[in-house]
Amino acid sequence: MATPAAPRRQLPANPSQEYLRKEAKRLAKAEGLKLAAAQRRLAHEYGYKTWAALSGAVQEAAPVKLVKVRPLVEAAARADSDAVRALLAAGERADANEDAETPLMRVCASDADDARKIAVAQMLLEAGSSPRETDKNGTTALHLAARRGPLALVELLIRGGALSWQGDSRGRAALGYARVGGARERGAIIELLDRPVIRDPQFRAAVRAIHAGDEAALAALLDANPELLTMRAIEPDCYPRDYFRDPKLFWFIANNPTLMKAVPDNIADIAGLMIARGVAHEDLNYTIELVMSAGDALGGKLKELTAVLLDAGAAATPRAILVALAHWVVEPIELLLSRGHPLTAGMAASLGRTAELTRLLERTSNAEKQEAFGLAVINRQVEAARLCLDAGADVNAFLPVHKHSTPLHQAAINNDGAMLRLLCERGADLSVCDTLWNATPLDWAAHNKKTEAEAYLREVMEERKGR
Image (cartoon, rainbow, N blue to C red; front, side, top):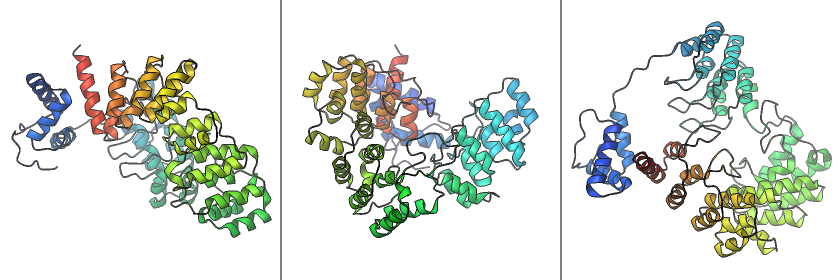
């Protein structure tokens, strides 16, 4: 715990978060301050730089509460399917508990035989257990299954919604756990989690040549195996149909997802080499979508690669434009506009071109207004967002991209104080949960240590409670 320097106040013997919140409210009322300002002053008077630091110190110092382990957790740890079935039938919840680990985590860490573990995990998933839940270290059921096996349990969790890329509190994904684990099927589990899964040796060699910028090796592979440009790397069917599932070879030039630590300087030449050998038009179109949304992952090659694809006949579809702007990538949009692409409301909102946005909003559909509003929030264009709301956009509608979340979630993760104020002034609902993590905007801010957003949202919550 950090030691406060020269505090003007002393905390009581057993301080609590509730004590601090009430003290901040009393100070705000007495001094006529905003709650966030009162919290900052209080933190300074106790010798801490921020309210978050003070709150963390109090939480660390709090006495440890002994939590009784629920029978369902104990039954899951034994992989006792009869007991788990009976407890679930009696109304025990598979999630929403105060245990250090969820029942699903406990069965994945169990020493029971594989068949029993799989049967109980299946039961818990069907009862609503989320494989994305974490313990205090950010560990998930998939991390534990990857380390211990079996392979079928790992596949079951992925089918049930586990995210292979979800990291623990140290950023380690399930693949890292598999690599240091002792599972009997360790090699197969590593192969499954090391996405994209590429089993064809020639395809894998071609991907390596792209990543290395080795034009000679890639040309030799394509000349000897022309089918590489039309085939797909078919992945295990446990994975969802996400944007890079069963990839084509040409997609790999985009580095989206990020598979190259450093993009080779000749990536545009690599693309041209493949285009010259006959890349299908549909692959050009999909790859430009990947390129346009890749941003910094292309290491300064974004504009050059976009131009190569446009010159080869790739179409920057509305979807490609939307995905780029949804990831705060405007460089390819500016390139399109310089080549005569018509300006849309979404583009204008993202770029902060408010004069043109005002005119465009007069003749756009409700869906286009909503899209422009969402893109304005994502791209931190407060005045553009205000114009869209004035034109009738719904402040609480889920985003047109990143569809699992609302504008308030996005403003919170951006730590965008001005946008948060606008949204809350216009009636944004703080209680709405996203559909991926089942978390409120405040939860997003707190989890991601967005301190300004967290303090402001807590202030709004307190103000609304007092009405």
